[in-house]
Image (cartoon, one colour):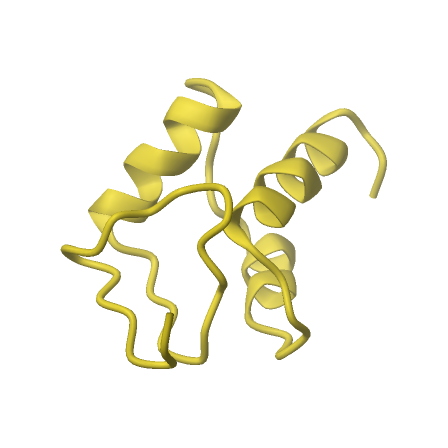
Length: 73
């Protein structure tokens, strides 16, 4: 995967790296809903975590959202 991953049409899996080109597209939202459930929503703290520049994958993001949803801020 390169830094220019297409977040609109690329295949998103739990192993997809979150790159500098990351965007909250409808495809990304559908991925998170499928992985996290219908209660999934983006909020500012989670979005800031996604874009903090530290290496992570979409699987890491799923686990982080679940941790936060369970009250583990």
